[in-house]
Length: 192
Image (cartoon, rainbow, N blue to C red):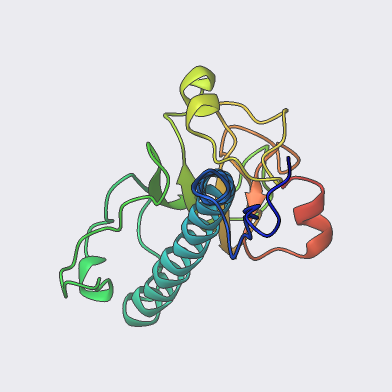
């Protein structure tokens, strides 16, 4: 027997608790995935920009040094060249040599005489990722950038040319893999 009019009908006005939980979970997963992709990419861009800024600062300081003393500073690996500190100022107003932006990286000012690998006296700033020849450490420290090629080794560096036959390492030819921050686009695309 049917009871007329007593049949209850459920009418829904929104989401159930299960539907809300599912939507929040999916949004959380999407946030984690996008963060995992975006943060490392922006970190690499920040490091690249910091390297460019630091190298420009060192190049400008070397030119001020040369203007005052009529010569560029001596070769200095991983530390500030003698007499150079008056031209370097960092954010803390210290005269410290800047730290490399990538883990294990360090800056050097190169003053190389003309030799078999370069026909001219060379002045440049170098950002190294290991001691020369230590390919295993370099491979571990190299940035995850498209310009870092598989052919990079313990003599591959990032460098900014001031003057001369600039290259990745004094011990290697100018065709050795590396990344020149202020060379033409053609040179950059070739990996040096």
